[in-house]
Amino acid sequence: MKKMNIGMIGGGFMGKAHSLAYAGMPMFFWPAPAIPYRKTVVDVTDELAKEAAERLGFENYSSDWRQVVEDPSIDIIDIVTPNDSHAEIAIAAARAGKHIISEKPLARNAAEAKTMLDAVKEAGVKHMVAFNYRRTPAVALAKKYIEEGRIGNILNFRGTYLQDWSADPNSPLSWRFQKKIAGSGALGDIGTHVIDFARYLVSEISDVMAVAKTWIGERPIQSGGVDKLGTVKADADVPKGTVDVDDEFSTLIKFDNGAVGSIEATRNAWGRNNFLTFEIHGDKGSLYFNYERRDELQVCFADDPGDSRGFRTVYTGPAHPYGEGLWPIPALGIGYGETKIIETYDFFKSIVEDTQVSPNFQDGYRIAVISDAILESAEKNSWIKIQGEQLVGAEN
Ligand SMILES: NC(=O)c1ccc[n+]([C@@H]2O[C@H](COP(=O)([O-])OP(=O)(O)OC[C@H]3O[C@@H](n4cnc5c(N)ncnc54)[C@H](O)[C@@H]3O)[C@@H](O)[C@H]2O)c1
Image 1 (cartoon, rainbow, N blue to C red):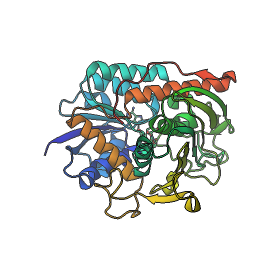
Image 2 (cartoon, helix red, strand yellow):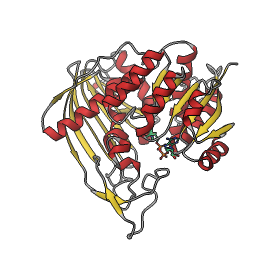
Image 3 (cartoon, rainbow, N blue to C red):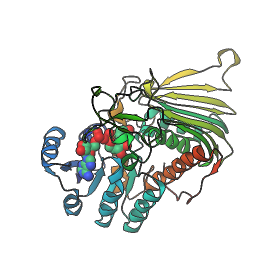
Image 4 (cartoon, rainbow, N blue to C red):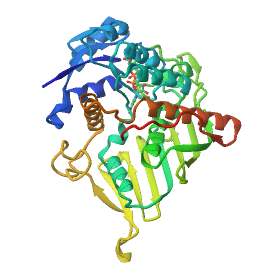
């Protein structure tokens, strides 16, 4: 079976998730489109890169991503670095003719995302942006029900992404709180996953009306390295630096198809860990999903008998999207890793079958345009109409 060599840039949290997916994909989806081969991993120092290679199962390591991008034996460049380096790496990789998967958000803002989109289009390579939550089988099942008309015309989408790892002011000032590296705060980090859900499940977003807040204006400085996402607290005497990104945003939204709704995200909601949810109301039924109970889709169909109408739970399993590759009994339970395995499967399939997977850089760019509009709306205190190119025929 064909092997494809991976050059993975970054060996932190997402480096771990993607490596697990490369190892696991053929175990779940067989025959695999191709076998991912973990060829070279890159981190900022040789020491970190060597450790990443040993831990994550890569043959080689390097501290120079440019060398890996130019390596003729590499087929795919996987970008799992903080947001400020996505564009430079992706543009170089596209020019070198590599297929690219980049972590989300695609870039720090729409202008930067556009340069990446232009580069992959010009090079004719395959591209994907890693909004993996839409690959949760229950989310794909919601998409299937919507496409089959099971809930009729969509009236409303309510989406949230609430976490609490940054609610403590002593959670360090990692790269996620610095505009020059992250681009934005809760918006780019987690809100973009909900924007992806909204566009995937409902339709393109046409207008936003937002508020945004920074609750904790300074945090203890973390000197470089992997973001520990609030698991490490700084001592009281550590010098502090300024947070210049949003801690929280909420936005009303209007969709191209006439539906309306809202999206909100924060990392400061005590008690909420990974509360990524949507509730969708159609004129024939409703759907509800909560990632903290990711094997379940709550459904209510208007044509259910009146005396038993109400939300009920469908546990995803073999009868549902991706079920053929996952576990043989519903509710055995999938985890974060399986969403990355499915993402890897779909990306490899798109390369081997010469199709363009979604979400891709066009989606990533469009989500960046919407994110910029949310911040602009919050600043101007007014509705903003979404500008930018329309989507070009990507598969979902
Ligand atoms: N899809 C998701 O659910 C999800 C979840 C978390 C993070 N992310 C995204 O993944 C990306 C990485 O986040 P993370 O949580 O893995 O960060 P992290 O801080 O855990 O790890 C980043 C790694 O990249 C390395 N790095 C930084 N600059 C580099 C460079 N120029 N060359 C090589 N290595 C470099 C760092 O040393 C570190 O090892 C971000 O864009 C983030 O938004 C996505």
